[in-house]
Image 1 (cartoon, helix red, strand yellow):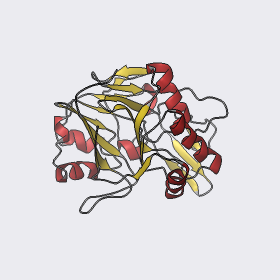
Image 2 (cartoon, helix red, strand yellow):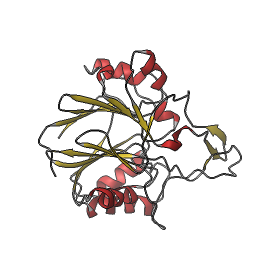
Image 3 (cartoon, one colour):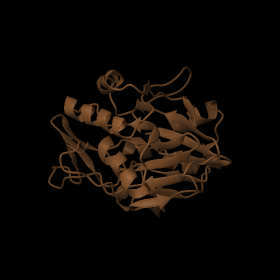
Length: 270
C-alpha cells in the first residue's frame, strides 16, 4: 500500500516561525506529491502566502485546497488566495460554512469563516483527493475518548452545541508509510487514528503532523494521545498550532518516538 514517489510537506503557517517568516494563531501546509501541489488550510490571514513565497513555493500552482474545518484560523486566508489568482477547487466538509462561536467565561467570540467560502466540493466521510491523499471527516467519537469541543456552539448563547463534525485530516500514502496530516484534531488523536484504521486499514503510521488541540486539555487527554501514538507505532510526531507547550513537552516525555515542535518554514520529506 506504499507509494514510491517522494512526498514533501512544508509548514506555511504556524503559531511560531523560523527566521524571517510570519507566525500567527493559524495553520497551513503545502503537500507536494510528485509534480502535484496541494494546500491544506489557509491560516488566519494572507500571511501564509507571503511565507510560501519566501520558501520558494507558489500556492497558485496547487491542484486543490483542502480544509480541516471551518474555523477562522484555518480559513482566514482563502479570500486573499483567490484574489491572488487561485481558481482551483476547494474541498471541505458540507457543514464547514455554518456560523459558529466560542463561548467562554471571558465572552463569546465568532470563530467561523472570516468571509464567504463560495463554491466548494463537499467531502463527507472519506474522499480521495489524488492517488496518494485521502481526506477523512465525519470522524466517529467513541464515548469516553477525548474530543476538543468544549465551549463551541452554533449559537452565541451556547444553546446549540457544536461538535465540530467537519473536523478532518489527511491520510497520505508515502514511501516511508502512512503520514497523517491533522488540522486541529477536534475529534481527538485516538478517535482520528482509529478512524484511519477503520476506513483505510491503517495499522502502522510513520508520522503525525499538525495541531492536537491539547492546549487546554487535562493530563488524561494528553496520556490518551500518547497511547494512540504507541498503538499505531508512530515514529515521528510533529506538533504545533493548538497543541500547547505544556502538552508538547509532556508528549516528549511520554513517548519514545521523535517529537518535534512545528514552526512556519519547516519541511518534512517522506
